[in-house]
Image (cartoon, rainbow, N blue to C red):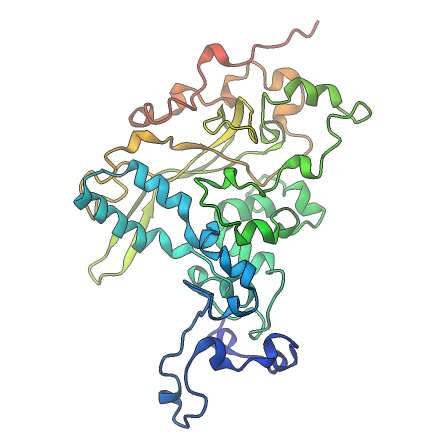
Length: 369
């Protein structure tokens, strides 16, 4: 967006029968009676909904503001928990790792305003429609603006040689599956997004896949609780390797990543639960190494092996027909699809021992005679 587009406040905001009745200062602060604009702007808050929306949004949306801080888009709690688990337990070292996380990893948070009024700051901000409030955030200005390199490109079919998600072709927006209740949080501090109780499940819509009258019922029953839906219905997806953070000579923060590859890998489920009981799931490599925070402290992630670098994933690139579900033996006995030891960097073998599939656990080829 051009600078003037980011700042333009449309006069139509006055016609908003809810928010239009509020004066700017009621949310943003400042002094509307001061004639000197510089003095009038003293105390102005750019985003009054972050880090605490209680005084702004919470005045009317009390139920949402109550759970605001536990929304994963605001707290980034799972990210912190994972880094804490890998970090050295020594308080001095841990503090340096945490400071690095705050500097580099905590900048992608969102807020009420950065979903419903402006683009998120992490993608350079800017009012979406002249400060008019958007009840449902525009998908490509908000959702895929942040979740772009992986989820966005997969869903929209922007990875060369791969089709868009079948749900995109049916014109599904993110909010079709990811509801406001999920996005706003429910007051619970979850360890990861897969624990969220009101998160989406395929069966929420595809509730008849196990019915006797549905097509491919037998295949669904055979694989029930054995493989995740993505194992059969995802295309290849982007895997990122390594990320190192630091500051340049001018003190500006930066990050460097290594290669990224389009791959499809099936691993053992490291997060088995009642909600996700499957043995085999799709796994994606995430960009972390033991030396990711080396700029700030040596060996900060001393306990790096406590978590896998190949994590369970649910790619947003679903197709009804995929190479691995064409026939039984397109998957059974096809070692190329499974995450085996030779696929994993030697330095990461111990970290990934819970997701690597032993050769004797790869499903055998099916007889075709």
